[in-house]
Amino acid sequence: MTTLYDVTPDDVEHILAVSADLKERMKRGDRPNLLQGRVLTLIFEKPSLRTRNSFEAAAIQLGGGSVFLTTQDAGLNGRESLADIARVLSSYSDVIVMRTFSQSLIEDFARLSQCPVVNGLSDDLHPCQALTDLFTIRETFGQLAGLHLVYIGDGNNVAMSLAMAAAYAGMPITFCSPDGYRLSDEFLSSVRSHVPTADLKLVADPAAAVKQADIVYTDVWASMGQEAQAEERRKVFAPFQVNAKLMAKAPKAARFMHDLPAKRGLEVTDDVMDGPQSIVFQQAENRMHLAKGLLVWLLGVDHAG
Ligand code: CP
Ligand code: NVA
Image 1 (cartoon, helix red, strand yellow):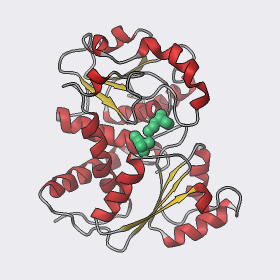
Image 2: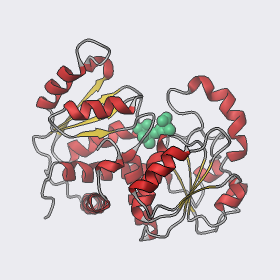
Image 3: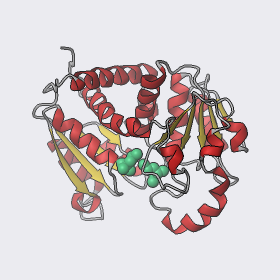
Image 4: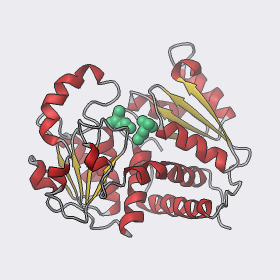
């Protein structure tokens, strides 16, 4: 799964259901050996707390194992060809999770790999996060269709995967970003052509955007690889901070989400992150439950029992 376009809405339903079942079982102390003898390989070009550890924990808790490689360890710095690396590593692995700058590197690797490849974040997309977000929203609200997701901030990898996930789930989604940082018309058209019922809007004013929100979502202003622009972005994004004043404009029942890591005091303030509307740590925990559901689904393992 290099993008959410690689799965159907039915696949998403299946992944969410397996994840929910395995979460419930884990809470009862049941950690079934569904991945016994299976090897998960992770190749990461960028740092990660949640993605790396949630996948490794998922594999271990289900009786499998994991191997972590930096791109340098894997030889992706030119030590050997991509085709040779993919051929060798995929002969040792059951699933490979990749985190890279370039989306096309993950897609090229997936084409060359003999085992499934999962996008663990690229500059363009973060599908495992978006699937987890659907899981967390359903867990919190008991439904997905019709809930209004409002994303405040950078039109980045997280925003793009959320747009695709929301479209699949029948959730209207509004994006509110500064000039120059909005999702492109080309991207929005591509989502609409994949999912004709997609309800995607762009709104300029954060206060207007959150008025009808069920969920207010934000992400960092400068993503990994954009550190040199951080200072300039702080100025541009300042009016888009999710703080108590902005949350007061949203319905009281609205929830706050953030994929994390958060830069507290920039895109979100402590009172919102740690406040009663925040579900960010439930969301972070759910990365592991979703990783389990995704691995079990990808490998076609029967999880019943
Ligand atoms: N949300 C997320 O993907 O976090 P990491 O960058 O820590 O993996
Ligand atoms: N947009 C952020 C997400 C981190 C999980 C980044 O790419 O750094």
